[in-house]
Image (cartoon, rainbow, N blue to C red):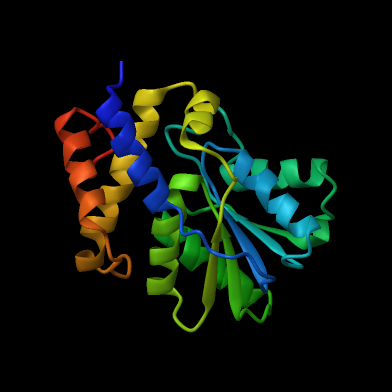
Length: 214
């Protein structure tokens, strides 16, 4: 049972992880692979709204997706996009990336090899991964403008969809830890993290939400 305080702290992290960017048309969208097929569906919705002419889905498999997406995250995302009516010519797949840095670097190489001129990228991720994806992309791909997007969803709704409140809060905590650690390791740009967010993170760690810490 998650306490009232832990729910409040989780909400602070949830809100912080989302960049709240105003969406605008970009050169390309990159859908970051994960267990969440909603990333592909949101990317398709943005494509239908004319936000980009081309989609890259990126991702191999991980321990959490191997059974659910045996052909690889990017392949399953592409299959879902085609089911929803996106033409195959508008979807590229990158099937080797196993972390966010590889998602960005391998997608960049794929687009360069395809001769695609990229000045802006719509990054589509899980709601709680928006900020880390943005910080990673800005570090690894300078000179390109990034706009973050995810499925519009409240924390409680996401917990219902995943079906495991402990896991969701663990993931929020793990994502925040990476924002704290990764700039000094050269993986991301530094982000301003409000004191209220770091305090919430500390309380959640102390409450045992630690399974996704590095």
